[in-house]
Length: 70
Image 1 (spheres, rainbow, N blue to C red):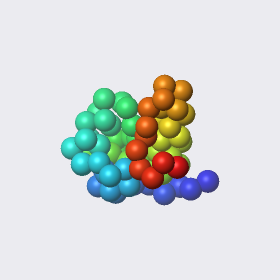
Image 2: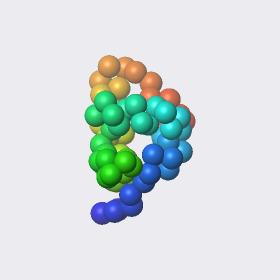
Image 3: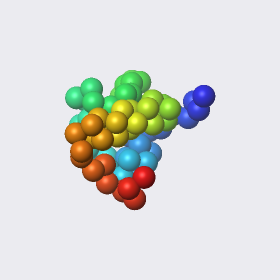
Image 4: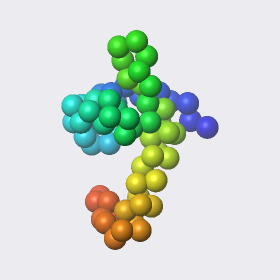
Protein backbone atom coordinates (compact mmCIF):
# COMPACT_ATOMS: atom_id res chain seq x y z
CA UNK A 1 0.00 0.00 0.00
CA UNK A 2 1.34 3.42 -0.99
CA UNK A 3 0.80 5.85 1.87
CA UNK A 4 2.01 8.90 -0.04
CA UNK A 5 -0.06 11.96 0.84
CA UNK A 6 -0.35 14.77 -1.68
CA UNK A 7 -1.15 18.45 -1.29
CA UNK A 8 -3.51 20.32 -3.60
CA UNK A 9 -0.57 21.52 -5.73
CA UNK A 10 0.90 18.01 -5.98
CA UNK A 11 -2.48 16.54 -6.90
CA UNK A 12 -3.08 19.27 -9.48
CA UNK A 13 0.27 18.42 -11.10
CA UNK A 14 -0.49 14.69 -10.93
CA UNK A 15 -3.93 15.09 -12.53
CA UNK A 16 -2.83 17.89 -14.88
CA UNK A 17 -5.56 20.14 -13.54
CA UNK A 18 -5.47 23.66 -12.18
CA UNK A 19 -5.17 24.17 -8.45
CA UNK A 20 -8.54 25.97 -8.59
CA UNK A 21 -10.19 22.90 -10.15
CA UNK A 22 -8.75 20.58 -7.50
CA UNK A 23 -10.05 22.86 -4.73
CA UNK A 24 -13.47 23.02 -6.37
CA UNK A 25 -13.72 19.24 -6.83
CA UNK A 26 -12.54 18.63 -3.25
CA UNK A 27 -15.06 21.10 -1.81
CA UNK A 28 -17.82 19.43 -3.86
CA UNK A 29 -16.84 16.02 -2.46
CA UNK A 30 -15.89 14.72 -5.91
CA UNK A 31 -12.29 13.90 -4.95
CA UNK A 32 -11.31 11.43 -2.23
CA UNK A 33 -9.52 13.67 0.24
CA UNK A 34 -9.63 15.16 3.70
CA UNK A 35 -9.29 18.66 4.99
CA UNK A 36 -6.69 18.82 7.76
CA UNK A 37 -7.03 22.20 9.39
CA UNK A 38 -7.05 24.62 6.46
CA UNK A 39 -5.30 22.24 4.06
CA UNK A 40 -6.61 19.49 1.80
CA UNK A 41 -4.68 16.20 1.72
CA UNK A 42 -5.10 13.30 -0.68
CA UNK A 43 -3.79 9.72 -0.47
CA UNK A 44 -2.24 8.69 -3.77
CA UNK A 45 -3.81 5.19 -3.59
CA UNK A 46 -7.29 6.69 -3.18
CA UNK A 47 -6.74 9.01 -6.16
CA UNK A 48 -5.52 6.14 -8.36
CA UNK A 49 -8.60 4.09 -7.38
CA UNK A 50 -10.83 7.11 -8.09
CA UNK A 51 -9.26 7.48 -11.55
CA UNK A 52 -9.80 3.77 -12.27
CA UNK A 53 -13.49 4.14 -11.39
CA UNK A 54 -13.87 7.00 -13.84
CA UNK A 55 -12.06 5.06 -16.57
CA UNK A 56 -14.47 2.13 -16.08
CA UNK A 57 -17.52 4.42 -16.20
CA UNK A 58 -16.20 6.19 -19.30
CA UNK A 59 -15.68 2.84 -21.04
CA UNK A 60 -19.28 1.85 -20.28
CA UNK A 61 -20.56 5.01 -21.95
CA UNK A 62 -18.03 5.05 -24.79
CA UNK A 63 -16.36 8.23 -23.57
CA UNK A 64 -12.69 8.82 -24.29
CA UNK A 65 -10.68 9.47 -21.13
CA UNK A 66 -7.99 11.27 -23.13
CA UNK A 67 -4.27 10.83 -22.83
CA UNK A 68 -2.41 8.20 -24.81
CA UNK A 69 -5.32 5.81 -25.28
CA UNK A 70 -4.14 3.33 -22.67
